[in-house]
Image 1 (cartoon, rainbow, N blue to C red):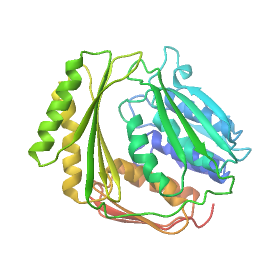
Image 2 (image 1 turned 90 degrees about the vertical axis):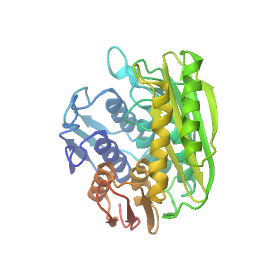
Image 3 (image 1 turned 180 degrees about the vertical axis):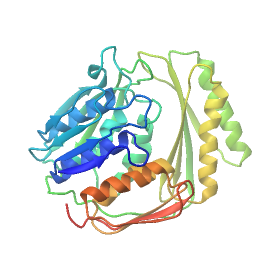
Length: 356
């Protein structure tokens, strides 16, 4: 059994999710201890528990410690991942509901379901645009298009937006399984981003006055044009049970995509929402690196399973990235080389799958 200390590095839910994905892929039983001990609400919360139960369902795993607040989980796969039609609702994991992130559950399940024979269809209910997670539009416009270059076939759609604290969002996805022992994923060289082709923004809101989206757009346009950029920004009236707003900016280059998000909240001026995502883009743009800091750490796991050597440059080496590498090294014989210091831009070379 592989033992993972959940307090290592950033000590959050990513340790759990990556460990579950790799356990399902490798078939190795795993125990994760000290789950999220560095967080104000340690242990398994609704989003994490939903992910655990979902992963257990697709590979018929035996579970110990799968309950809210549990600091330890034992996960023992008893079958290879199985394709099918699945539906999970984060709100069912906790009395009073939850806006836990559907995107994080999807990312955990994606790689194991690529191994399954046949296609899978997922319906995930919960938060689609919530803090500390990639929003739905990041998945659709940045993450999945990048994975498609590795030969991964998956798509995602949104039926209803889910905001904190109500949740209630609905995202669906389709994943094409390979039926192989491991997907034949191609390696990638993401070290040069190339010329900027398009800068596209979404100023979206649900059940709020329309001037909020207009002000987000206006401020974002002002900030970007001042620096010589000419974005296309669309205002979106998002169907939802709750209230919320977001500004999302997509930067599409010749070789890569990058995404930047700012969520609205009570007391946060709309102008600040629009400006924040643009400021993050400008910081990334000035670095000259290929990937934004979030995509870099999200690609570590799929790249570690690819055939051959992959490499990437990122505007910031984060603790999330280093922690994900640490988890992968417990399951695979993949070699990593990190050039640069945490908190600064750098390069990561992933040696490719050696064994599982």
